[in-house]
Each structure stands twice: as C-alpha cells, then as structure tokens.
Amino acid sequence: MEPSIDNGFCADHAALLARSFEAQLGRPLHSDVSGKGLYHAPFVILSHDVSEDPVLTYGNLMAQTLWEMGWDRLTTLPSRLTAEAQHRDQRDAMFQRMREYGCVEDYSGIRISATCKRFEIRNAVIWTLHDEAGEKVGEAAMFADYSFL
Image 1 (spheres, rainbow, N blue to C red):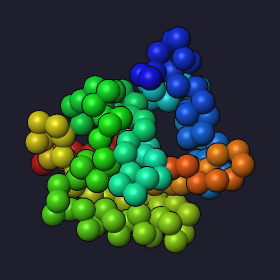
Image 2 (cartoon, rainbow, N blue to C red):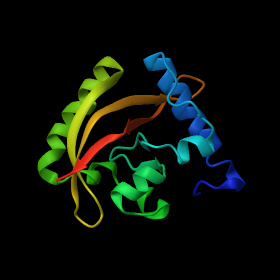
Image 3 (cartoon, helix red, strand yellow):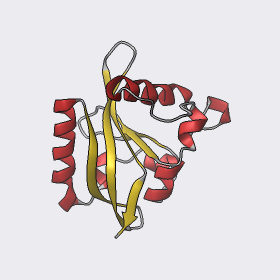
C-alpha cells in the first residue's frame, strides 16, 4: 500500500529502515525517522525483499522521482532492473561486499530510470534490514549524491 496519512506513511517499514540503519551504522538515518519524515526525506531511500530475485518494497518520493515511476510500479520492480545489464555485475559485487561486512558506505554506480535516463549515484549507504527477531527481511539503500549522465 502506498505511503499515506492513512497508514502513517508506511510507519512500520520506516521504523524497520531506521532501526536497522542505526543498529548497523551507529547513527540515525535521518533527523525525522517517522514514516512521513522518511517518505518526504531530501534523499533517496529504497529497499528490497529477500526473494531469489529481490523486488523493491519501498521507494520514497525522491526515489520515485529519480526513477520516474510511481509507487505501484516501483514496488513491483525487481531491484536488479534499477541498473542496466552491463552494470549489474558491479551492483552484485557491492551487495556481496555489503553482505560480508554488514553495510557499505561508499557505493557508487550507474542506474537507469523508467524513461532510460542514466544517472550516477555516489556515496550510497547500503545496509541489511533485520526485523525485531533479528531475521533478515531485506536490504536498503540511501543516497543524496547523484548526477545525470
């Protein structure tokens, strides 16, 4: 369900993003980690699930704008499709490094929007999402630094 006032802007997922980020990086994700605060944050936040071909489960307004797609389309997209085929090996290597070390704070890579606009993301933070029982339920990314190519 798309974040809205009715669901606290996906308050449960926002809490998962914020709690996992702070547990792994030792600092808060944002000054306002409410559902509304993260949905309207001045940086991109994305997450995907743990399926064999992970599907995006969240993309704040900045993510929707950058990838040029609304919530319904974004949250049915396999996350690998956020990058062109020739850049997926680099993306996979980053996830392998993140899984080994728990998080990555310096990721850069090329991505592509729904209308084929290419852009480079820089200094992205990638981390694992764990539920309150400690089970891995996804992975997330946040970044503010990007430029169109």
